Length: 77
Length: 376
Image (cartoon, rainbow over all chains, first blue to last red; front, side, top):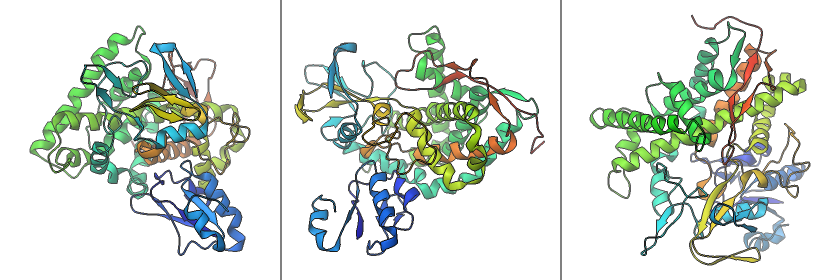
């Protein structure tokens, strides 16, 4: 599983930092981005789902590696 | 999505999904006041429309909004506010020193109001001496219209504006490294901000932060006084304090609602919102949406995830949210440490006589075992 943050949608609520600091971090301006290449370790799948549901803007998506195109166009895994 | 004929007629949106959508579609639903060629005035953040001091960047739309937000945004980021945490904590301790030997106080007027005002004035670089007067006027703005306190508001706001103009005048001749100097000597699309823009920006920071955070503290303390099982954990567990902060913002929603207006005939859900039609965006209602929040009316201090819109959403998302969180958390932990047996007399607590868009308390008696000052 991968996690991705849509920089155009993120408004810096920082809710994801409360539930998933293992997977996301903040820019200096306070906007979220996925750590590393966005890969979600198996034991953090639930955490990734929490991050997705924590965002009031719907800026965070998770997707499986073979489903990347769907995630980029707004689908969810 | 519904229409009401109240207050001249306007739409109301209440679900989390549609509230978020309206706020995100800032190009369709504007925040600024606008005037048509025929002289018709429309838009703005209040229903019904009423003349008030302009606030920026809240009452601006893109592209102007970008310029205002860029001017002050870096002062409000999580990392910038983290650096101010110790200073905020010191302000809290100072204010608590003023009451701790008495064993009783008014949480709103002796604690929350002065703390929030001082922290905001400190961020601006303003003279903090009249902190209580700032807090008082900000509270009046929230609830005094149409009450017997309207006269006091009518003198309070000009007082606050003149304070701001004095601070601006000092920075014009002698800039410092504070936020106010950054506004006064900043650039809007390559030109200096006008005096009116400076006042509107500084007024927004003051009015946006004072009454809301103070209301949040009052509602939260009132709740905690009656639900004491989590007080130890709130004092000691930093992560729990963070989830609790978000839950109080969700549950209280200090700004209950705010308006937008359609810039053209636009589709929303199954409706067409006509050009110029006001839309009341009900944050508080969205924050109680059972489709998003399980058992939405109950307070669950460890609630996570918590995608509340208590700070709004979209580009206008509350600029001061990280200040509010820091002030709230530093206040909470110090009250719980220095006055652990505090009790709020909820029976004598007095809510705002009018809770239109802002929610809060006029007064809230609290008692506690008297303790020593930290500083003499």
